[in-house]
Image (tube, rainbow, N blue to C red):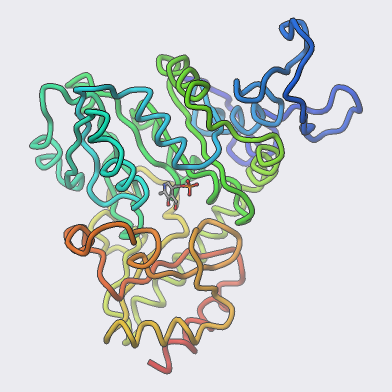
Length: 385
Ligand SMILES: Cc1ncc(COP(=O)(O)O)c(C=O)c1O
């Protein structure tokens, strides 16, 4: 794996960036051409955009590779396309995947809606228990797919355990690292093969674009790039530029966001109207010890349940004045949503209940505002409950 000894905050600012050779500008230029003079091998760095060749695509990809300690990284048009390309690059007809049960609803739907037609088999399993993961393995298991912390229950999975099981059976191990980001958790250093991201969230960080990213060990680089080029969801030059710009402050944002989320989680856990708080930073969270071992801080996502009915939870959310009820997460502003109605709306009620996603569960994406203002808004909203 690549080893750039500079610290993460320095990598965020400098790694991968390609100052403009024409003007001397420090920022990576947005090159908009889809047509390039042939043979483009002789040009400094350019080529057909779908081939992931533009400076503004390569800069955030290389920044991510440096942060993840990966050999290769690619940026894609969305988080889900990063996941789809990764799965389709590895899995073929007759292969089997074991997938963590409590994952992002879109990933769950991608598997259940598309993969049976392709003849790709999969089983969901509880990854909090090694025995349950092992029980789901089959002779044709080619891939193990984890997401930690998970959306929306903040389940924590021991990545070193997943990596060890994968190595033992010769399966490729993948982690959705969206919630943690490489600032807080380095999946590849923990032994995983591939790390995928919804770059829409913390990497870009300002709720203004859709993008994804894949970081991997060298052995998977060519296959992933080939699948990206063949399926075609590369990121356009403009959004790639925005992604790189956002990543320059990733370290600072994750530090502030993690501090804020810890304060909010502690405050919520003492609130009489709140029956449950899911945040890996709390010592009573079942995954706290593992999270403390494999993460440098606990991130900005938490979820909680309010006492009372769904209607009462709805009324409390309607009372919020600063915190917006909105889909998506990972931006500078604090957002709240009912996972049942948003990220996990496509699951059946049975699937949701099996995954532990209740009707009054609220997911909070804590932003970089002053924590006292976040708590004050929650306080006035819950007071009326
Ligand atoms: C953990 C996780 N992975 C993947 C995705 C999909 O990302 P995108 O919406 O950028 O396609 C999301 C979106 O919410 C997510 O939360």
